[in-house]
Image (cartoon, rainbow, N blue to C red; front, top):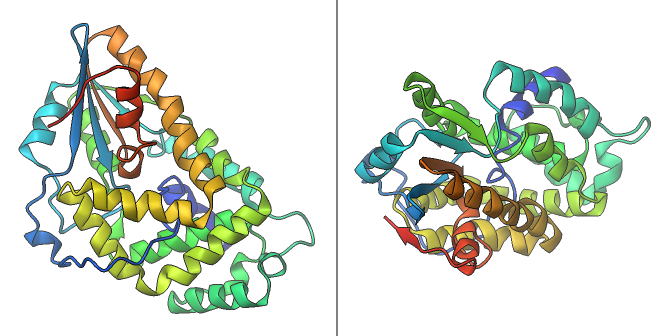
Length: 306
C-alpha cells in the first residue's frame, strides 16, 4: 500500500491547491460543471515586442467542465513557448518523484505519523481515511506534509477530479502535438522540497487545519472551481490565499510568496528574449497583493486582463 501512496502522491503532490486548507464561505455555486460558461482569467504583459500571457490553472478538474474560452485558445495558439511550474507529467519526471518521495517524506526509524499528530488530530485523520476505505495505519511511516497532500489528492479523485483532465495535462499534450517548446519555472524536486523542508510543527498545523475543513471539501471545491472557471479572481484569492494564510503564514510564504517572487525575474527574461510565451501556473499565484500580476506591476510593467 505504501507504494500506492507514493505513486498517487507523485501524480498529484505538486497541486498546491489540494488540501492546503479551504475557508468556509457563504457564497454558493451550482455544481453542474457542464452548465458553466467558462471565462477563466488571463493576463497579458507586453514589452519590447515580446508578449507573455499569464494563465491560472487548476491541477485536477472534473471532466464535465469545459474550461476553454476563445481568449485562452487564442493566447495559447499565439505562443511559441509554453511554461509550466515544473515537469511533473513526463515518465522521467514521475520516476524521479517516485524516487524522491520516500527520501523526503518518510519519518526516521521509530517515528510514526500518529506519534507526531497527537490523539485528537490523528483521530480526525483516521476518520477521513476511513471514508476513503484506506487504513490509517498505512500512513504511519510518512511525514505530515506527505500524508496531507496524499489524502487531499485521493479525496479529489474520489469526487471525480483528475490530473488527467487538469489544465497542465491538457495543455501539455496540445503543446507537444503542435510542436511548441515546453519550459519550466521550477524543478519537481524543488517543489517537493518546499513542503518537505517545512518545520514539523508547521506541517502538523497545516494537516490539522486541513482535516478540520475537509467536512465541506466537496462544497468548497465546487465554489473554488466555479470561481476560477468564471474568472472571479477576488473570490479565488480569498478562498486559496486567504485560507493558506489562516492556516500558517510560514506555509503561505513558502508555497506562494517566495515562489511568486522567484518567477518574476524569469518572466522578465521571457520579455527580454522576444517571442510569445504562455505561462500556466496554479491560479492562486496570480491574484492578490502578493500575486504575480501585482508583483509585475510593481516592477513597472503594464499587465492587462484579457
